[in-house]
Image (cartoon, rainbow, N blue to C red; front, side, top):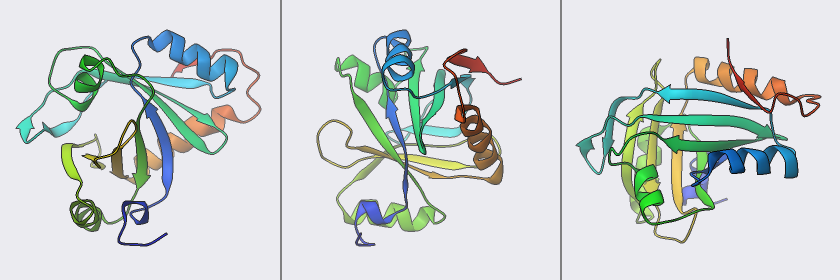
Length: 178
């Protein structure tokens, strides 16, 4: 992969969906595709969030599960705050919303996105300091790219969720972390 293209930012670790029917999406991924179990991360809070340059207080939940080594995320927004998730649903879209790439160099990722003609439309810090940006890359469905510069706490959370998928027998398809 050429380092000056968006794929050179870092490895793809996640496929994310913003469906109209979250329960149906969870059922599909757990009962048809065999991903899971999914962990409900409800009413997530982001710090210094912006959408198209304006402050954004977005009330959303994410369901995270694993399909082998690939993380699957299903997102639902609970309010009408402007966001990439709301814009997607307002357009009546379904299917793949974004692919998440992991980086250790967010300034470099921003440069690559700009050089490739992409535009950062949403950005924030997750609790604990992990930085995340979402960029439109000018393609079709799924052309939004999320870039995550995780902290060790985020990596530990993902590892904990992934460990649930090892030898998962299909029971308890949606869980909450204690």
